[in-house]
Image 1 (cartoon, one colour):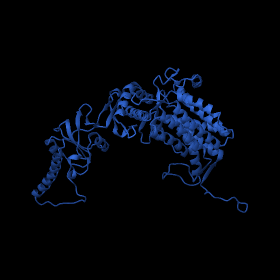
Image 2 (cartoon, one colour):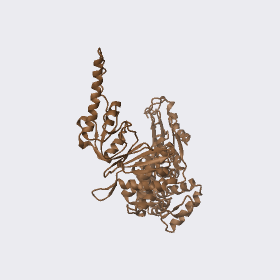
Image 3 (cartoon, rainbow, N blue to C red):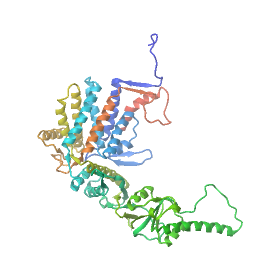
Image 4 (cartoon, rainbow, N blue to C red):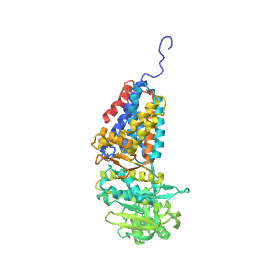
Length: 552
């Protein structure tokens, strides 16, 4: 106060939301994001159709894809989306679970706030519960032999279930396990390390997903540049070229006056000689096959064909980089300095039906998973499901711990956390119990998405776990409570640990905010079309709640 007048610190077009209003505001935004993806959880989860501003359509039930593609303009909501992105990066799967638990934690925290429990107590309780949950997961998890292919297949099938791959999931799971085996190596400590960089995924439309295949090597989806070139070669020397086999152009525009037809012919002869020299250089290296990232002149194509060299132009950079590992070659960017040591070695065969080249190297570490589907939308969703399953199996091989799925681990954790809450003093005890209640959202949503009664299901699951059935989970197809581990519903322990930790940290981050200060607009979209002035601020604030509501 200054002489009885309030001191104005913020500008006129600023807006501020404090205390209870700020907490309600943030919790509402975060819960809206979580509720947007809950219906996709589990084998019976529904899909979302996402239409972007260009009219492109994506149909998926992959949590992280939905959240990334949604046009969300809200800082709190984007904090929850980061949970999904972290889960995807660290575990490869469980994104929907992590976001749903984060939303439920905030919902239950809201109830505690209504009881005048301070956010600091809730945050501490959630942190204690999260740490205890990680310890309990480690205790419950089953250590497996990472060479147990049947269990790894079950893990892959569990990850893919509900993602448009049910009909062919056994075939795809077998391919995934074989692919992971091919790219797994032992480090100095004898631990398994899965290097997914050596695994390439290619897609094709017009065929059934059951015709997907695993190839020891790489694929080049291109045609030979000349009809007279060979279509395959065994024990071939392979050149990977990042230089055009064309006439070199000058760096500056030039004009040449020609007064005699012989002068023009000399220019043409010079160009022809230059191309001939490039082809001779390739032939002298001993290359039988050339995969060129850039263009190949028509005349050079003719010379290459005469030399009996198979050449492909405009190959993708990613394909060349992958072929480096497959055939043991170096990518050459200057033909003049190339040596025989830059060449790779392998077999190249042509699949005329699919119009592909299969490239296999001797002791190749790289493998290619060729996914097939009837349409582009089917193939895209198939690829997302397979990518998740690859990450899950890779985590299982590296970590060596698995859990029963179908909501079994969540119900068991909830029961153990309630027992742990009795040892926690103060108001934090209520937060630990709220954390336990939040975990039970997963079996409730699984049941609801399958058209089952979520309350009855949860009661039956609790009863089974009270009787000591640690692996009792929900069979969403029959509606029965059964031993899901024996039924083959298996999840990696690391993914569950990451989901619980990420959800708790995100919820605590939101709860710790008690003041939102905006310089005119809370929008995180800082485009040039923002409207300034005092009128813009209320729209920005209301836009968060309203925008999320419109999204739903």
